[in-house]
Amino acid sequence: MSGAIPVIDGHNDLAWRMRMRAAELHTDIPRLRSGGVRAQFWSVYVPCGGPQSAATVKVLEQIDLVHRLIEANPGDLALATTAGDVQRIADSGRIASLLGAEGGHCLDDSLGVLRSLYRLGVRYLTLTHGKNTAWADSATDVPNVGGLSAFGVEVVRELNRLGMMADLSHVAPSTMHAALDVSTAPAFFSHSSARALCDHPRNVPDDVLARVRDTGGVVMVTFVPFFLNEACRQWGDELYRVEDAIPEEYGSPAFERLQREWIAANPCPPSSVRDVADHVEHVRDVAGIGAVGIGGDFDGTEVLPAGLHDVSTYPVLFDELRGRGWSDAELRRLGWDNTMRVLRDTCG
Image 1 (cartoon, rainbow, N blue to C red):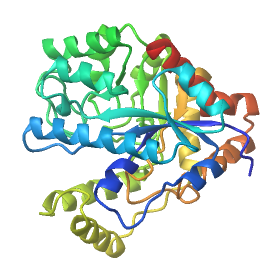
Image 2: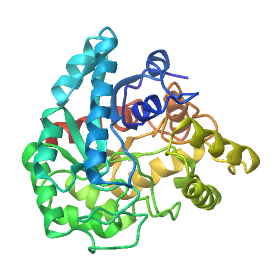
Image 3: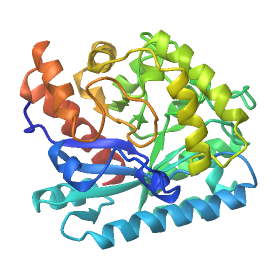
Image 4: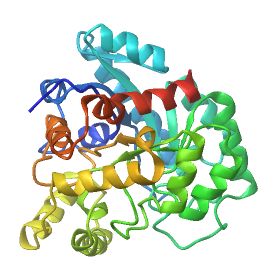
């Protein structure tokens, strides 16, 4: 395997897993280096449910956790807020660390909170997570506002003004279109795959992929099996139902134990690096070679495709695509150049 292709990954949930003191992790610095990761968007995720003000407190704690992780490893990590920062840090031999807030519920319906997150270094906001906000519809909830409300439009415009990416992973197709109708920035999906290949509502339909192409945006293809093939999607739907019935806090050791017991008794159907490569090529075929990136979602899923078990394995995907005729220049666009362009165009 070749480690020559640099990677900027759109989504990693290590911070939440650390908060929950998870027993096993997909991520550490040696494995990031082995995988060629030169820049990482660390998700400062908090679950839906409960008062939104509590989510605001938790997202601030998650941001603090990532800042402390960076400060504890100054020889390996450095905070980045612009494409220029990313390139400078990568050239210094360290891993550029960016922050992405996953789920607009953490704003507590406040543009002041959004501006504060920006000042703390957050450079994308995923408009929803698994549930709707009052102002945006989620892909995995019953439609509420038909995409974006008037306040949702204000959120997208403020993101544009700040120079912060409106992340359209997790939102309903109606929300994708509504955001793209308003936004002046390139389309951005931090961790999603192609709906034409797997009919999961989290995936990106072809009509939206065409708009990604037209805006000069990027879809960072994810490795989560539920979004890769139909057998895994159906299994994932059952897992979601099981998780919803677990009375423990999401991600806690007790939750994780019950979740893993169910998975051990009901194994996920097969998926592999070939499935991921299929999605990468579909995004390329519909939206163009400039529109595809990587958002693995490591430490955000309990199951992963064969061959892509942790952050050291990005070269496995590059080798699969190389075997399909991709040049190193095309692989570099996938791993690095496309996302860097969108980051530069949006955040500076």
